[in-house]
Length: 635
Image (tube, rainbow, N blue to C red; front, side):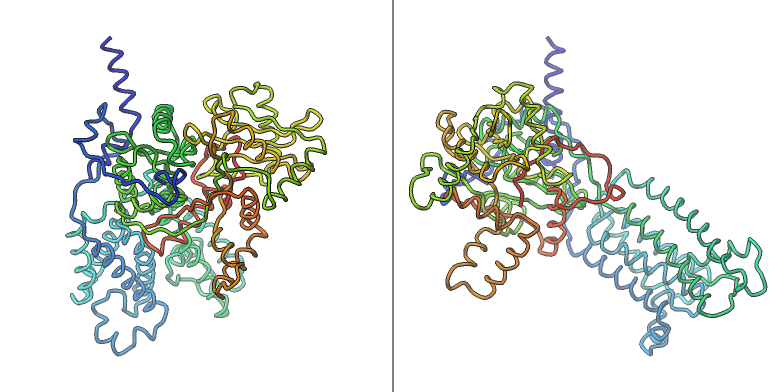
């Protein structure tokens, strides 16, 4: 009995891997889009202690005074010093300016000695490369800048140069050491040795290519050169220093010099990138976490139509300290990307949000939220200082209000009748009621019917079909001559709602099948106990609608024109037009972000997460689980 209790406690500990870390430091818009329930922050008195001890996945961030000016100032100073070193090395006139002659002794690397010039160039490029990471509080960047400053000071002291030549570096070094606690963000722990091995592999390749380069035109070598001289020339050239070899013709000598220096620069930059790149853990939803998420959805799943998509198994989750709320996310290219609203009790959302922001701060990830509701956006703004932009609208059809009668529905009515006369019929069933053999056939159709080789979906797609754990999903199939020609898959939205996950059809099937299947789902909804159905998401829907109205301003018209132009490659206008056929209620969705300058990077991360942007295999972090079936529910 004692052993069983211990096992249960241990399993409970693993269900919330990050809540101790959090403690250390889209409300119900579907029910009433214009009314928002007040959300109270959970307190220990109201919620009580957690049901079990929590084991953190990472140690908590130690309490520290926030000095946001320190990393910003250090980053700018690092950038300015590095740029000045680069300019002084590349442009001799900079070293001879009157102001430089007067104050240049304060900046090391301004001597005319070619070795000093090369050292100035290398140090400058390294400092510029480290400036951004230093501004983001990266601990490895701090270590690199401290090492560069210390080495530069030691070299200048060894050469017995005037003391003024190390003043700026010495002051900068002292400030970095004094405020060292401000640079705590972690990098990818796996990249340390990878960066070292990559550096040595590229260095060996550079030397080999350099030897081929300097030996390819032997007739241009003045006075000949031994193998040692050639290796010496290549190694010095990689560092930007002119070697002992001389070539006939200034152009060829410059060609060799800049080629070697370019190889050396590429090696340094690639090594720095690997050494400083942010951690990107493999997103995995454990069985214990999935059980907890399903329990939260059972109690609070009616609040958000995107809640069930948190069960994608290529997402990670963070729980609030009490375990009453959770946030599903994935780290993509240094962006910690959450999807939809937090899962669970809104009173516990602030705790989950703080855990999310603490994790992002620890690894210097950029926090962002895709597709949150207005109520959730306000809580993100209040708890995390995030701003929000309207991303688009979700089409929600109320079953009780839907009818094919009337002039506005004439287009859909005619299309449904036409496709029915062609011999198509629909079946609407729960997934648990479909035989395994038929599930296999539907999965094959869904795979063959997608428009790209890569499965798409992240925020509004489950990423699988036919899993026994998803037995409550509703599947609509369209058949003709006993052959399945199209399929829709809906995931549960609370106890009385459905949310579209998958929309696929045979490429040779007749147009209009999607309208037929949606109408069939709406007709069978009362028998399934379904009161509302969420359809596709229409990105920038309000701009498309307002831009075509009489009196729209020139800016809005141009913005709509751009969206229509982009619709040639992305489903923007077509999804809006398709959804509008069913007279839905439009529910706005937002993207939440912390700083405006992060929006381009967030947009690229979202495109990568949704698989609209697929990186080459050489640039990917590592293998990821490919979902069986993704959704056509795209931006």
